[in-house]
Image 1: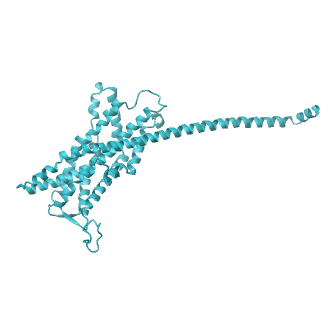
Image 2: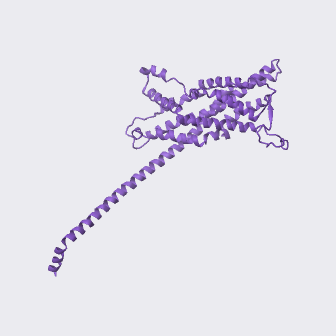
Image 3: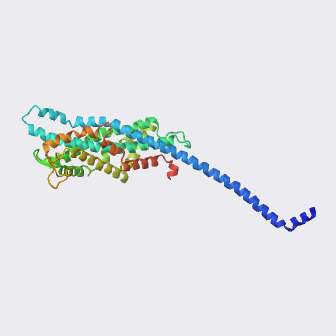
Length: 359
């Protein structure tokens, strides 16, 4: 019996060897595939967790952006109202002065100027803080990443404070320069328009378009960030390490402000801001119920005209709505704009990606 078995094995030796090789190969291939699958699944899980963590950090950073904007609106409004003080002129008119017409003319220019400045500066505040806080947010994400190779933080607390304090330019010298440019444009557009002349909402919109064209002919970034990196560079021998890092962050911010994407997002925000302003003004240009002219819809932009003297107080009060720390439709429109959010995500993505991966 054993000899017959042995003879069978000898006759089919090659088949047994081949079968054994195949079975063994399949076994080891299966083990290898299982190991690779396990490694792949582990890598996928790690990447998913990292991406979820990154997304959570980004969304948290956006909430910080929104709260920071709202917290800065009151000082922005105060700076605008203090420099363009129409209230003092209104109080003076109540005394029935001899130069009443001259005061009204000044009130016309200041009222339009401060409302237009409020739209510009609020839009700039929203998009500038989106850039700055997402640059900082990206670096903070890298500083807190488990795979970071160095213990030197990219954005130490002192640097963050020094860098973010640059926003004061928009509330100070930048705002003053913006006021000067806008006031000149308002004077050019509305200076010769008599107080008794009636304007429709469509004509007011046209006036705003002319003013915007003059204001936006210049470089807008100069209102948002001081151009003082050259002065800092001249003091390079006395700069601390934190100063050097801050200068780098400011230069990166300037690069962002000069980018076509930033220009597009700022224009989108300005268009939305002035559109919302016109929506607010439209409430005062609606005809009384039943008084619409035949053939004209009640919301027609030319249906109602008001004397400039009556439009002035309407325009003058808009700054309280535009720069309100209580979330208004105006601010919400800017904060929730899809293009602004997408731009913020791109900035965060850029600065939260390790430089070796970017290369």
